[in-house]
Image (tube, rainbow, N blue to C red; front, side):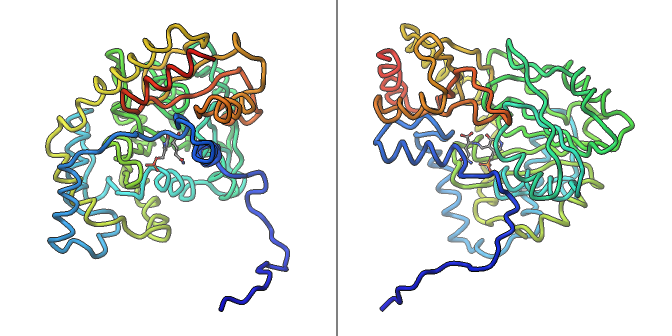
Length: 390
Ligand code: PMP
Ligand code: GLN
């Protein structure tokens, strides 16, 4: 029999994250489940992943690849990522010293922040910012400085970034294609960042998890393509996004050897190594570049279908050129705060989205919701039917 006693720590808890509640993705996905609503909130596909990839994981498990992988990842996958980066960007990262496999991009980002941010260091992020950056900085004693992306197009104002840089600036975190807005950085943005950080001690952490989800013929501007920037950057990728398998939690980091050395020092204590059979399967699957070269067309078709279907609605489209997110302005429908509106849509109209204010430090609320279009055609049709009725 289980003893019934109140399980509670009676000492003083000195919380390291006093302001953090549950992430908005957890909150909205739970609400969607509780309310039996269509879930276009948290970003994940609702269609099946490749049978071939599943078979490969299975095959490697049966062949006995079930024990710890080397700390930085299996050499086959590190080599495959190095080759992929060379094909995509014409840059060589040494698979022995400059590529590290991680348990998703989240672990990569946390580890990079923990490796470089010390007490009182400043880290610049761009609002609306993905929610994993700021808490990782704060847990490690750093201070987050929030630059504002500017409308139209959620552009970065590099002059204001220049004014934010101080002798304590340790890290600048960029994200392209950008979650939640779908904005995509241009060559001039990367060149400006390269000039801004030239000869400084600033490190750039580049979240590129949507590297292959980019539309309208645009080129993904990885930090890897800019030699002076690449020298001070860690680039982060996620196979969760690229291969529609967000639940597999596998990603990677590219960085010059001296930065990677510091990254690894923390990586080994955070996770040590990432699951072996999936790494082996990914290494083989990546040999065929069609597996990811087809993604821009695949997702652009979904975005375009979604946009076509919601044309009769009263929502105003904010152009998205990458990621699998579409932001919609509802100011013509309601002046409710975005969280309240998103909640009401989930409960009353049975469609869940993400309110954009949750990505702003100051809670800026432009009456915009983010919808994930990584969904089957039938899901997008159902979603559009609902949105057109609102
Ligand atoms: N960065 C961004 C911008 C993301 O949108 C996500 C997840 N959706 C991540 C990082 C985390 O990726 P992973 O699931 O591989 O941890
Ligand atoms: N990155 C995903 C999104 O933006 C969610 C990941 C998560 O739930 N932490 O929706």
